[in-house]
Length: 328
Ligand code: SAM
Ligand code: SF4
Image 1 (tube, rainbow, N blue to C red):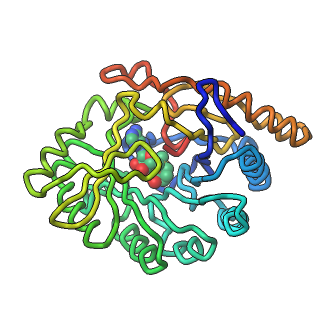
Image 2: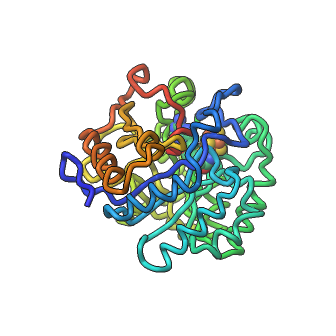
């Protein structure tokens, strides 16, 4: 079992398959984002080996993310292997976070591989604002992807970053549309990572304000529903759907945090809101055996701090790395 220094069992791995992406969301990547050289990126075989080690040590859930996981060549090959591990009971759940641009092509394959639910990031249904926020993305493609996910029977949660000038205008329409489609919707406050630090200062929309705005139109009741993460949900009486809210500030969730993250280069990040990381690539490439790898995973977990370092008005103290390194 992987137990950290604060007696939290680690059961959830978020795995970045690539730092590349076909979009450039303003709160995530700079326009001229520099990516890791190919030889620094773990091969799919190396990633498979790390996953097997995590599972051996008690991880029950893996979420594939990025960058955009579906732009990684042969991602489906790894997804197929991990899906097999879900089928034979080695792994409890395999999920994916995607920007949706390639879902029209992939949704059926994901469902066939054993994925049951996915998160799709979509901040607005306004094509122009979508293109501006993603620096050139086409909303239409994401909507086609979401339709394909629905048709394939995948459960979808749409994630939207709460932005002033966007969510205060387009949030209600997004709620109405998502609930009409049978999708949960989760609003995420801008987190002070990489490009998000400047966006947080300039355009973050506090979730309490957003909730107040939504309450002008709908009746929201706090819900005990939990999706296994930091989101707090409300039930919307009129639509019958759910809305989640994820705020980075506060440490309310840290004491029960059961997750760690790994970058596509093999850096194990025990906490999203800290710089600390343990490099697994040298051990993976040194010919070391499984017991050495297991020991390195435990060493990385031992670095997990009691709580993150996100703090209101203190973005200078937050990690400089982009969210795309760890996939959120
Ligand atoms: N490319 C995929 C996507 O967009 O869903 C997966 C990776 S992306 C980094 C994962 C999530 O992080 C997305 O929902 C995105 O909106 C969110 N994200 C990126 N930068 C953020 C920031 N600074 N604050 C809050 N959420 C952020
Ligand atoms: Fe790409 Fe996702 Fe980052 Fe947007 S949030 S740039 S889609 S990795």
